[in-house]
Image 1 (spheres, rainbow, N blue to C red):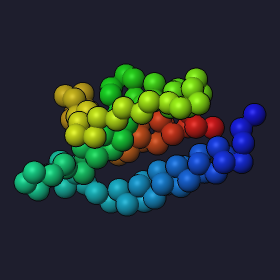
Image 2 (tube, helix red, strand yellow):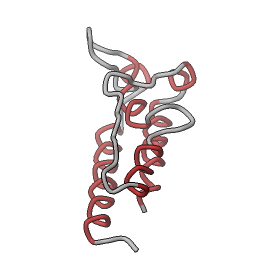
Image 3 (cartoon, one colour):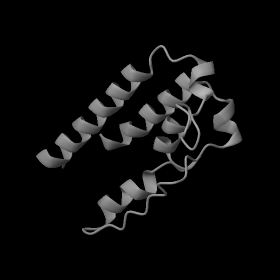
Length: 105
């Protein structure tokens, strides 16, 4: 059974995803694919939030279920921007990012 802290964390994450979706509304594919020098493009940001393709961040989240003191090993410099994700629409990447939050209950 989820504790009030777990429920609050899930609520905050869902709210952050809703905020991300709102910020991303109206960004067209051309703008989403452009990146300033030494920065990620808007398209690479939700790709990074999704985590590794076909795995996502589920193994990291699983650590909280399986361990009292989980090891969190985030690859902060990796946008996980594969050819498949580069070919996806920006709105598709944002939707994939949102889908990954539903595992939080």
